[in-house]
Length: 461
Image (cartoon, rainbow, N blue to C red; front, side, top):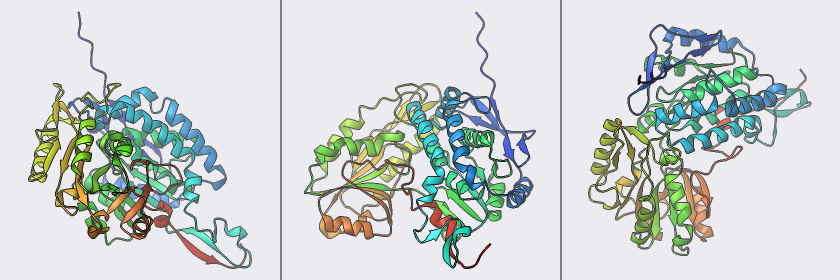
């Protein structure tokens, strides 16, 4: 019996202002087993420069058509055949390449479609109440909401398909948008940009520019505003650049005070750590407990230990999967960081070899002895959590530098302090996991805070 031929790699072209662009020597996109599944066309710096010039000359997407265009694109993204891939083929490719469990990818497809359909109204949530979006209505004098530029660039990450929900708001606000996809997971932005083109967004209003790092620098230099995803090194690199919005580690946390029984909230704590495969910036990486943290750590470890290690495209998969060498490197790094801590789970390793060149990353739970212990700053791309003691004398300093903080407490003064703390981006109270998100609710402030400004206008057009 003949062995069936492996499917041919999918071609992912750059999507420029004049349409698709395919290079002669595309870059290979591999799945977690090392199998080539796609060929991605990378554009050179000169192509980036010319594309940005074309975007700058183009008109914004007409305001009157935005909702209809986005609703049509959302439907096509979630259910249609886009770029030659039906939604099931797309989801399987995403799962295989970025190692995200298939059920998580499917949920992300639905969630992304919802964000696309509501992108304009979400963007409007950030508009100051005293401003008008339309200068025609300003009359004798008013404030209008104006863009800070014309071209918005996205230097995307590939850890989760949901990362592409945010930049839709820039398009809705009149920016022309250039998306540089991650070479690890280019399928979601390619599908989304193609769906928007099919719905009526012009190619000179929205482009997809896969590049190497040299061309990525040209993209960031040439855009008026850019959002860049990465680690602490990326945040440090662009911290002084007002035109760049760096999106680094979330270091999301959970606080449980003594007036609350953590046992009643264990489901929320587990969900915060492990939902989304534990790969998102909104997943909890630290739990701070007023009192003895050991019982909570033990219970959390018991729950997380039951999660199965499976190939990412398995219907029952819940844990992220990476290449075996990458898994071993992460395991080695975790052992280094966790030296001196009390391991409740993962102390003997987090690598589950799947015998195909890949490995599932098993959860890890470590207990530290202080609320300011250095491991609490370590965020890894799988369900890895540090459990620490916390007391009132520690104050809110250990809770700083946090994207999402879920607080299980009845202490109103403490909540007021957390809401006032500038380095805590979001505060959830009670049974709301750190990974909860919704259209119109800010992720790390409203994107429009970065893209727009209030400007006085007097007179008539």
